[in-house]
Image (cartoon, rainbow, N blue to C red):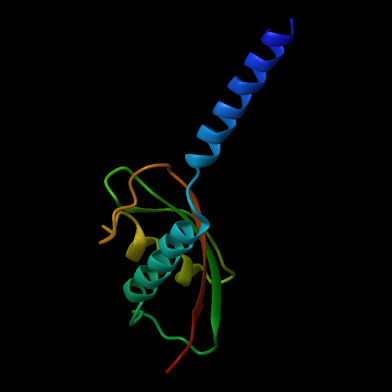
Length: 114
């Protein structure tokens, strides 16, 4: 009975070590989020509509297997901004490889008149 308990304890330590080694570091995830924010910012430059005030939106997006941005939702009070964001971002290819686990990202957007 005692050897069985020791064996089960050894197996538990082995699996817990393997599981903790397979997690993605926070730094890597933050770098990916930062890369997405930079890409979104670049793609949304020079809007094709008149801006009188500052416009805000929250974009929820994911990256598909082809490394393309897929806009899931745009939360904004300005319909033109929503349409503009979806048209500019949907299925745009990213330079950095985001293959692996599919995650959703929240990107805040602030558009100002110049």
